[in-house]
Length: 332
Image 1 (tube, rainbow, N blue to C red):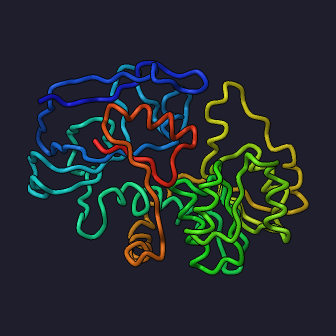
Image 2: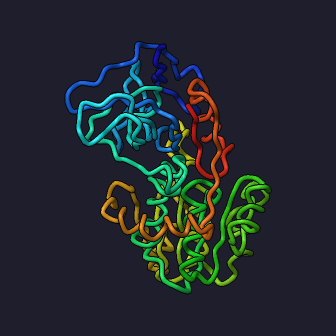
Image 3: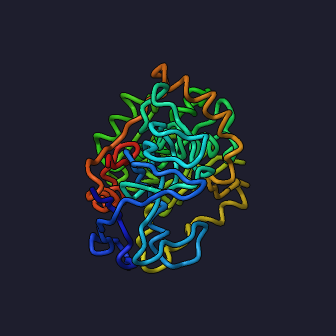
């Protein structure tokens, strides 16, 4: 039996294609001292990986051409050289995009498959859930009674942001998404007060209609036209958490800055960029608060699961194209 790896074959220029990936079958690796061998079961597929495919300096080290890519994964320990982990343990780690991973024990975390489905530890109870929690509460300094606008609201992060805002007493929560089905999911299932398809009409126009009294908080996953629209609608002393800008990731030329940024002077709003890595201290508090909400069904989540590790590159391209609702995952 072999192991399978997904490698970066070449750096994309503009929109990535399947040609940028290589699928390789290799021998199953053997763990050394202080390491465990994990058979991965589920892999995380995330927008930030697009940045790591480029050689440009960024907050995350670029993937190396010809080398296996990596991302979040949950799997079963097959072999262990340390006392803390036994074969059969289920662990969360950062060496996904391969069927078998040798992981330093200190970089693996045991998860309880009885407490929640293992996929949840890559999404709603994992990095994306913590991103939503920290971004809304710590970065955007959400307060009860705020009107909140979330772009990319049907994604893994955005869908949790909107629900948390509602559960914590937002006056109004508005989301944007790219299909009518996603819009319906936001309002009918997740309890958003309003949602719109950004492809139907200019975002600024639709946001003004959905939030006639303006917005107090903007959680940005998209950038571009959405950011301009949020600046247009934001109230005095509003707060923006800038988490992602998926609309510009594949641009080959720098995107124009928001053309209405000068209104930051009159409106005195705050824009803060965020990376979840700055907020790991909140993880225990986040799990304590959010896990019961997930278990009780008060906080809903969706997953788009693609079967087969060889389909991971296509799943990634589909994610960039907005094909997912909620968290995009690959079942190995």
